[in-house]
Length: 411
Image (tube, rainbow, N blue to C red; front, top):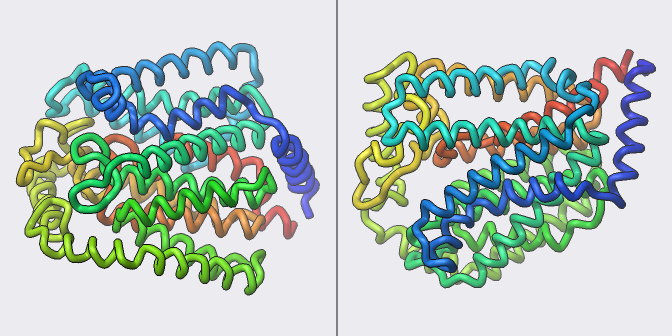
């Protein structure tokens, strides 16, 4: 084994042992914010009686505040983490995405250019905060703290979602301010993070993972549930670190949960199949995809620009779309052929980097997570960010850079 690979592995193991009993409060707060912020518009309206816009403003203000605090905390810190991450091809594509999306503000057909600029700065700030945190402390301590905070934020979302009255179609969420797809996405993403921490032996996350998985199923977010099952199936089939007994246990628990919720699932199927051509049904999605595709080809090469959907695209049967409900189509509409190229190149680069990891458990987990994101992207995505958050790609990049590849282990 290469001596550099041995030293990097030893450093990672030591850091993991330390971070299992310690936490970086600021990093955990950032992780909590990344998850829980989707509730801000709902809190502004339902709790404080304000317009949803105030919740968005508070969210952006906190984002900028966290960036300033992270910058102050990183003053004088060693820049090695930033340099190591920036050498990864996948992170270079992230920087290119930031640059192109920012330049697209020059031709964006957005309804509000100041709002678009604020959202773009917020998207960049997420990744900048993570990079600055990586300059402040040991890699595993920062990463584990961020993940813990995100899991806690998602558990808070899950608990509040259970306490809220169900929507008219039986799903979790609020009819106007918080969709079940957002709840399902947060819970599914946090579940993968809990799996990572448990594999790194950084605490026992069994109870939070169960809460997140059950809430995901209760959200009835079809796309997210299917993508989650595909990603988890890949992990169970390919992860040789888990014995057959453990895999059978997971499968049995999943079947038990489905049986418990079978009545609800059957009732929802009746509601869904009788929903006509609403935007939430497959028929409605086909209409949305066709409209976005028709508009996208009008600006084939560079697209309509950043934040060019909300209040620009007309409502679909009283449903106002925030994105194209398909990641590839969303990038095509926003940035044209350049957006499609950047998306495929970024995910492809990340996939190749992950396949080189020597740790089979970590490799299978992140590949399963990427598969989950890709499958979800067929019918859902994010308004600005990619389905796999750009800030999390920076985290994966740092972990890859500080982990030995299979070629190094064999050397």
